[in-house]
Image 1 (tube, rainbow, N blue to C red):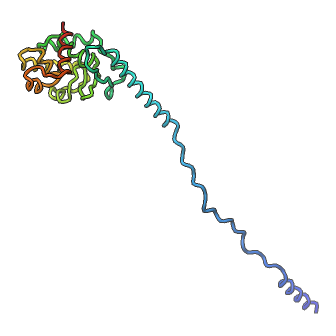
Image 2 (image 1 turned 90 degrees about the horizontal axis):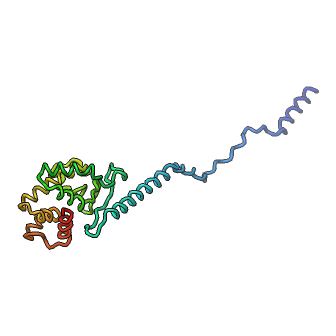
Image 3 (image 1 turned 60 degrees about the vertical axis):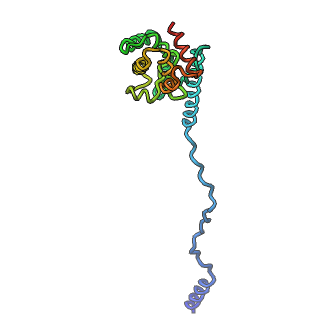
Length: 221
């Protein structure tokens, strides 16, 4: 009897006891609206590099304006733009000193039978002795050689003073030969082109050309 009572009590307890939990507490679902990760900040040197480039550009422009002012004179034509070409630093864009320039002029003048005063006058009028001068029309260097002229005389570096003067002297000699050593006609052709001079039958009625011829001739006196 006691044994039966024990079995009955055990069964009763099994029915009334709360069931053991078999489920783990679920983690809260991940939010689908997470804020996007912020974009990586630009490195500080990017801004500093941009500012450095701007300061360098301003310095070159200031140098160009100052050099144009220094070489300007009432009798001169509009001064060429003085911008350092690629690979040339601004401090290397000063006018060439006479001790360096004179031997180059004398050598080219003797080689091509051109008066040194004529070469010097053309160089002064064309570039104000700036080897890095660039005109609005694309003429370059001391004697302001156009690209076609530089190519014709096989100038490797148009900003090299020696090469530029040599090519300019060669071209002047050709013009002097063409116009029977008439310097004024040769200068007019150097400024406006032989075709313009030939069509005009002399110095063309172009103010720039006439002023150019007069200015160089005055330098030779």
